[in-house]
Image 1 (cartoon, helix red, strand yellow):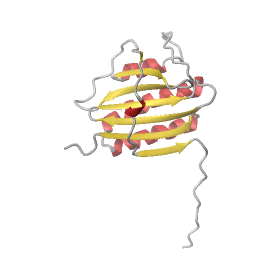
Image 2: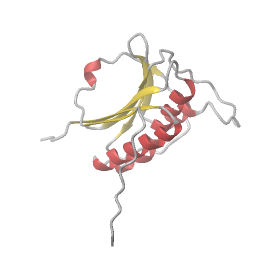
Image 3: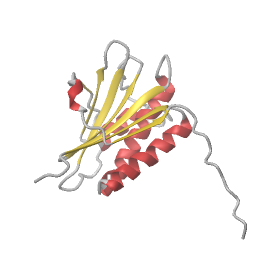
Image 4: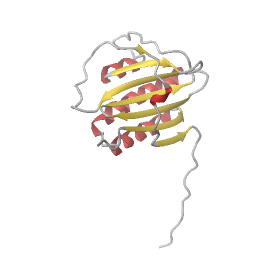
Length: 177
């Protein structure tokens, strides 16, 4: 019997550089908790690239939601923002210092895509296989899949974290000794 056929984690945040690092650490910790150590590097890289795109390109704001979902043999990582414009993958020049994020996501993932989310947003996602080991990363052209996925796909929320507003620093106490 499968005790956890679906595991789901959601993080809401402003896609600012300091928050991106926090989410990368949250994703890593969640995958360790699920005993998916072999996926940490790729999932962290992918979520970093997707959040960087929100930071650089999303309008009208940088508010977004990161979701990671583990379903039997596949991890799906998605980033939902409030900009309805779907990403465009351009061929970056070999020495370009930018414009390679989605190509990297495509190269290290099993699949990836983007879909509209209502009238004022989108979801960009990628998947990683969880069983049988991961295939080595090879250079391949980016695959862009635009699809409609029913909202009911994301139903069970195990953890939710809101990083959209600054958190107060924890109180410190002095201990006499």
